[in-house]
Image 1: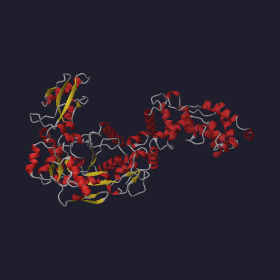
Image 2: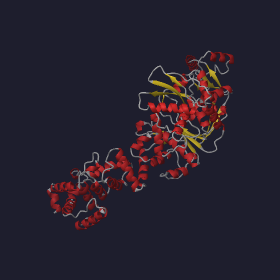
Image 3: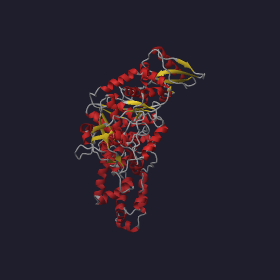
Image 4: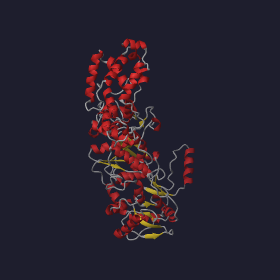
Length: 637
């Protein structure tokens, strides 16, 4: 497919992508036009003909240049497919890589200039690896970083750590970014918002040669060195150390090697890794905002660790240290599993002369069995919670309480209240236990605090997405409003509304009358007496119309009059009335259920919700009353 070649004319681009123009596809003309436009306007393209007649391969530039040109010329919709990015860079010869890095000098110099300047304001970051969904633990980390930045008027950055090409996908990245957006954790800088420290994907920063340049700087300053040990040699050293009961660290074979031998091997093209030269007797100490002072004996802990692998691929800790510095991150807030990475990152930062950020390492989130939260505990990804009907503000509220409090007994917060109250000093060292019941309760509190119109809109949206009903059908808005009124005090999740509506539209009278719970009301003739009164009122047209605008008031007036006529009140009136009108002994208020029933009709296409209208209920009630045992009928007479 080709390789990266140095280009002439001293371009200020970073490196190159191959762009494949498929002449048989619909967008081939657009792609070809884009290439010509680049060539004509920027004079930075050189076409190279492929042996295959149906394709032409063109040099283009790294992400930020393509993005700039697209913005400039309005070509955002053009589909240009990179055939090789990281892989092409890694496959190139050292000479070709050096040429590409030379072209990227402006990007690297800008990054270096940023890194040596101390941040003038709070800058936090969330750096997910796009290998799956956003877990609640990651969401909490992002939230704490976002709250810290917002509390202090700073910037919240999102950086995608996608150098694991086998596991990282753009689909996962899109999912994570969508989850952050849903939670309301808007990025000030990142792959969506852009920003002055772009690019914000590690893969693009690697292709830009940023990490290779800083590795070269460390070698030139004596803080790093090339290591020519083979995999077999390293494995042998490891086994020997383990056999002696020693820590299997690299023994420093090439740490102080003869420069002439190093040059000879480089000139011969032998592959090598780049290792960091850990100073003898070095200790690293940080003041962690959660854990207090943490120290490491570097020689005993890490040894001379790798910065670049033999193919030129930078390792995780090196990338993170360089990115935090060049993006001027002031506070690194992350999970405690990254605490052991800190020593390597601090060593790199100090060797490069960069400012070391403030660290805060968060304790784990555990399941109710106190094991690490995982899928076996139920929903763990943010998107799962969204689909189950949780509100983003409730998720924010609950996630913040996982390891933080403001020193009071308060549990329900708005987002603005959390921004004002948040402080890293109030984060606890102990693991937090994820309590689903508590989350549901908090969600219910936020649901009940919503204006009715907003709750109605959420129910309509959720039902439309789930295809529970036709949101654009005549009467759908009035129906959804009635549903919101009925369920407001009963639900903890938006999804809880559907079962309540299903119950309100059905009429299981016979099953209820046969139950043990209803037996007392059947035996004392309460059901029979109230039932006959309801049937008489319905047949006489005295029951209020269910779809009347003032139905609730009219219903209460009728019930009051009926109770006086029957000499019944309280439970002796309302329980048999609930049974004969709804067919159940529990549920939302009777008039709220009847209002929903009055607005339900077939055109709403209510999914698996059979409607038993009032007329059929009265027929069923009259039949059921006629089947009551004779003693009960006699008592009622």
